[in-house]
Amino acid sequence: MRRSAVSIHDLSVSRSQRLVLQEITCTIPVGMITAIVGPSGAGKSTLIGAINGLIPAADGTIIVSGLGRLTAPGVMRKHCRQTATVFQEHALIDRLSALDNVLLGLADSRHPLSFLPWPRALQRRAAEALASVDLLHRAAERVGRLSGGERQRVGLARALVREPRLLLADEPFASVDPALVQRFAGMLRRLVVERGVTLVIVLHQMETARPLADRIIGLVDGRIRFNGSPREFDAAAEFRLFHASPTKREKNGCFNA
Ligand SMILES: Nc1ncnc2c1ncn2[C@@H]1O[C@H](COP(=O)(O)OP(=O)(O)OP(=O)(O)O)[C@@H](O)[C@H]1O
Image 1 (tube, rainbow, N blue to C red):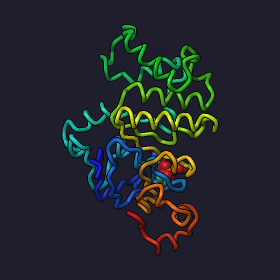
Image 2 (tube, rainbow, N blue to C red; image 1 turned 180 degrees about the vertical axis):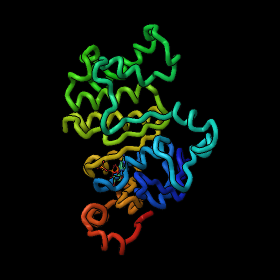
Image 3 (cartoon, rainbow, N blue to C red; image 1 turned 90 degrees about the horizontal axis):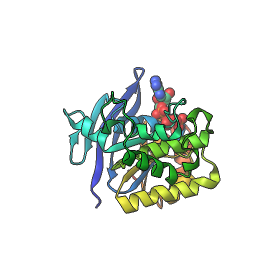
Image 4 (cartoon, rainbow, N blue to C red; image 1 turned 135 degrees about the vertical axis):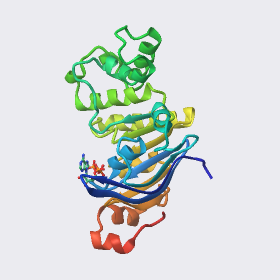
């Protein structure tokens, strides 16, 4: 049995005073790819936000392996240092170049008020991260002038430059050219295999999730409705997750959890 990077127990999360995640209990295995799937509004981004500590829990616990409970003093800072997130809406600064946006991924490695140029070694690391997403040729371009897919790749590079132990990615392929999705999926797989990174990735397309993931967590209406391997995620499971009416889902309950 694999060690867990993160263990989640009975987690509930509210947004605007409405429960959007309920009774979430699962583990994120270390050095593996866990895909979070489910219909729109199921709570996938909220779960990513809870794991990276941006969205507080209303109830339950999140335990980070080697650090402890996310709410314990000092744990959050250490957790942030070893975690990187690729946000769904990119969260980039349009007026800065692609390279400078990637360097922002390293902002916590120097004084926040530093006006000095970035050290060469860090600039090289940022350039390598851009190269890994095939974007080195746009390094000097202002991000506001890049396409949606290119911006998404800058966001991915900004996360990769941190060399994280835990990488959280919220639909990182959403506006990436379909021809590039397989390449980036392969790159993320290598990151996991070669560097032992733990990857939690929100994906909309099951045809991307199935071959990429080691584990699949399926959410519907803020609850886990599937937790198993891609092999176990058969057509019936897919139907229950994405197509069953709310009453049918309720009757079926959680499967493979
Ligand atoms: N900032 C917010 N304030 C209040 N409610 C929110 C906020 N963001 C999301 N929600 C609500 O929380 C629920 C879960 O949203 P979330 O974005 O986590 O779902 P999702 O599965 O990631 O959806 P999608 O696939 O469309 O991105 C939804 O009902 C959504 O309306």
